[in-house]
Image (cartoon, rainbow, N blue to C red; front, side, top):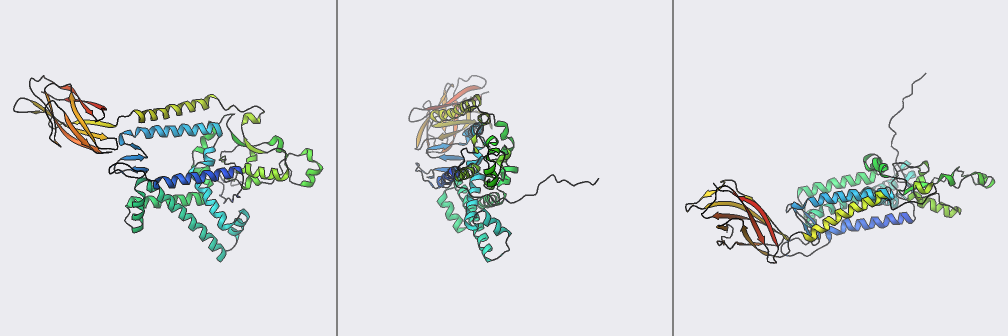
Length: 466
């Protein structure tokens, strides 16, 4: 008996998805334009801020360690908000998946959005599905060379713009544009644009469905978040099977066959190349292209029932879909709590922040008059959009004098005025001196910072003594 060599891997075959018009195609194009408008519009939008603060509406200022979002300024110590937002995004993804399957993959994923644009460019230059197949199998000539060159040039243009607008989020867009044009842009900016250009060109132009099928982990575990009420795209075999494409046979024995005429339209439009009639498959990204194709055939053939549509396993079993269920409500409650916490923080956070670091060398200084001095580094953060004069006082330590070395305007028992510009973090060296009588051992003290509007911020520390 001869042995057969069975390959564990299937050779990749290039897909030629057919461009299909319809409701879901229009919906996807609407979202593509919306996302592109947001992605490319936000870094170009200007937003006036006081002082020397940047006038870009959305800016991630890495050197200044700040994130500007319209009137909001996110500081380094508020990085926990990013962690909360990532948790919200994950819960939102779970919510969307439990409710409507892989609707994120089909309409909002970066890979889907950019691949849609690249496929449309390919259609413009090379024609419809049959024309693209014919062009690829034909020998090289002037016509083929021009079409291929034009397509790849536009792909490269989209890829370069993708990288450029990405780096615009990290620097002033007009300034960085001029630097790119005259060649003086920073090295990291060039590297970032190059990496995003190459990755976009490769992923959206060549990898395409392979990203969704082999590279994306979401496609592998998304089925675990489905239940009987999750909306999915499904073929209804009870009305479509058995299939028969021969009209003569269907006319003679129509009652013995289902409504599916086996036209394969649902297969040729699928961006991942699956046959939805084979049942649920992890490659399906729920884009709705097969629904548009089936609707078009249904209308031409005057079929009474739509064979492919958004439905649920419960609905296919003859029962109504239950949208309000525990899992959906739990995800909604978790998102509401997290987002409510973020909003509460922004509405209640103080307009300034005070941090105090006691200098440990020396631990304390014994003065000639018998007093004890400790040195501190005080950092004041002004979160407002105007210059602020803060009053610094010390609480919990008797007979204490506060002197700020930066201005040297301290007065015994009266505190210290600290001037900080809008959106600035100013360090000050502060000397705290206690006059006799002095108790032995360290003492707990509090620095109290008061703004011109009466807001206060208190930080506790230790005053070292013999």
